[in-house]
Length: 96
View 1: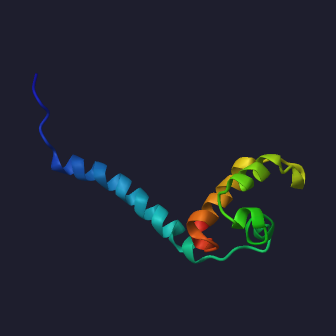
View 2: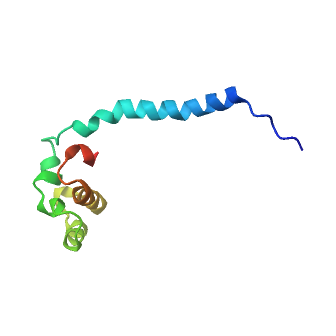
View 3: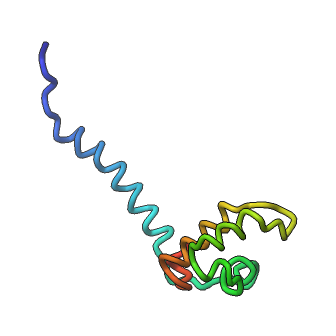
């Protein structure tokens, strides 16, 4: 059984594709870290919600699984926002 010969051109081409994809994503979404919270629903979900602003707590998790307001039940969303506040505080760009 023969090993295939190393082809530098083929390797560079194959490596260029994921690198190009990473650069495209970075240039497309890199500016998000400077964005601010929106007035649309961020006050309800984050900035004026004391359960979320307190971060990830047992009481907050209980609240997330028991809260049925806004006509839908989505505890994973609440817990995700709590974790973001726990890790990043109220820095909106980091919540992205």
